[in-house]
Image (cartoon, rainbow, N blue to C red; front, top):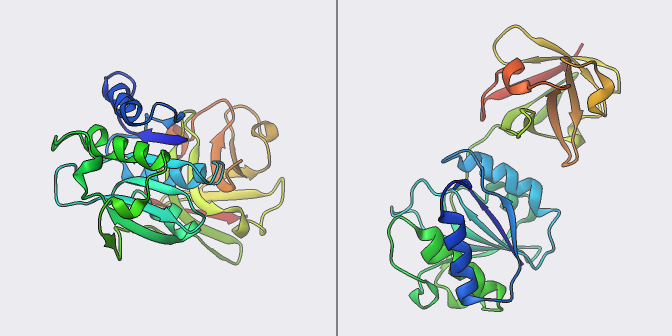
Length: 260
């Protein structure tokens, strides 16, 4: 199976022709669309989404991830094999940072062997390099045949989550479709909170008060809730509203949550 993620959207032909490139190589593999509405050019959001998705996929999945604002530049096309056996195909721009950090890296190959490419476009490596390579790997190709081994990869800089006393800090990972604020703070740091606690959420401004709970209906409509979501990370949400509009902290910015 190939799990496919991009920032291409659904209002253009890019996703379709990349899938055609996969089918041209491997007509048998299943293609699972994870998301094609990643914020344009946001490698950070893609990396955080990949982190959440990988744990729910079969280990033999090939993850095709194309958010590639540096396409055609010196950044390398790569195939990364995680220590759990999953293979990741995409640009070497930090997009696999959190998957690599959580699962460890077994090896990385630069996709130099043109035998497994489809074309030579400088602006559409998603179709001409990443899609066919993912298809070949899903069909059983050994990654050693793709190109030379790399000893390092691009790594995103980010604010590591931490807990001190009655306070936890981290950064905004992304906003989802509903406007929920997704953080990089794992549930392992949340043992200072109990259901019903009042907390303050801040980012260099007047703190906003919220309730710590388990479900969206633990607060009334329009009120702010903090809870650990189904992916195991702290989420800030507004019941029947938008945390993006209410909280107003941008992707990549720091966030602090304090038990009152």
